[in-house]
Image (cartoon, rainbow, N blue to C red; front, side, top):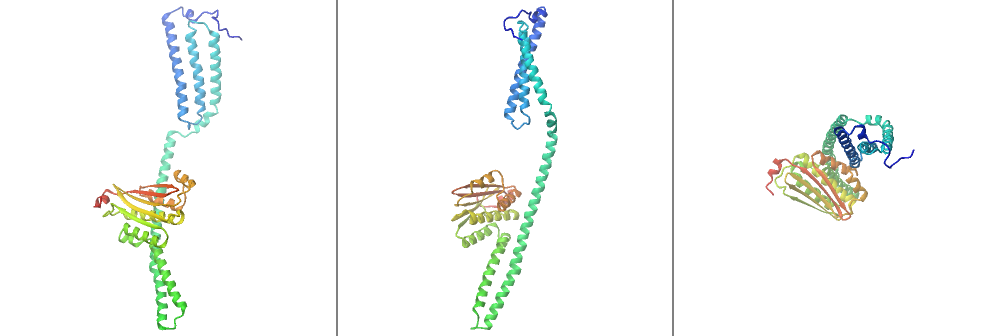
Length: 362
């Protein structure tokens, strides 16, 4: 078959319509509007596929766009053949439309079961609600575990201080009594035993306070942090400094004070173990209705691999996980900034309006 693109020896459609102006205009306008609509739809489908690459089976939209373009061309040829009888060209376009439509229909058949299997908006809403409830349940469980952990720390600290401390003190007294009865005949081993008892008592007291510093409940967060920072500075080669700003007179809830103390404790433990920093700074300040804790060091920083895990929300270890859980339980935010020049950890917690209003330091 050879297409004849010269003016063919056929009559245009207007002769079939007997040059009825109204009838000719009806067909011309209708087919023109259909062509314009069919031309706009593919652009919309192409824009949709470009912007939403996550839509499954997005290639089928492009197949539909191709099919619709050919459908539009058939209507354009209907307008053209009203006055120019190029029926071979019109037929060729219809043949291409048929090929595009059959190919699209065949490609659509295996997609239908997969499309049906895609969850409906109602199913997605139900699944999201189930996930939300599960997340809240996990958050409650995490909060209870942290509470149990704090209670267990307090119990062990009390046992160390009261039971083991008293036993060690009793052993020391018995040895000293024996030494007093045998004045001038005291073996060197007994003197060493007394020194060992003193060391064990000091370590037991320190461990008890680290597990749960009693001054946190008795005199407040500032004194507890001062005690902890001073003790770390004495026990290590790190020059740790603590500063409070705009916190005079602010009484924080006990659970918030415990969370802040544990965050500082974990941060400084990481500085001691991993950073290699000669110094660290701890600050506690109030900014409006927030209390902000900042711990900075001048160490080697966090490795790029670990920083990538932090950015992606990955878990680096039990310590960081514990900090995130504690901060999250109280509605706060944890931010970790690190470079080869050092690391800064910021933890911010919301505080009640009443607690902020107590302060006289602005």
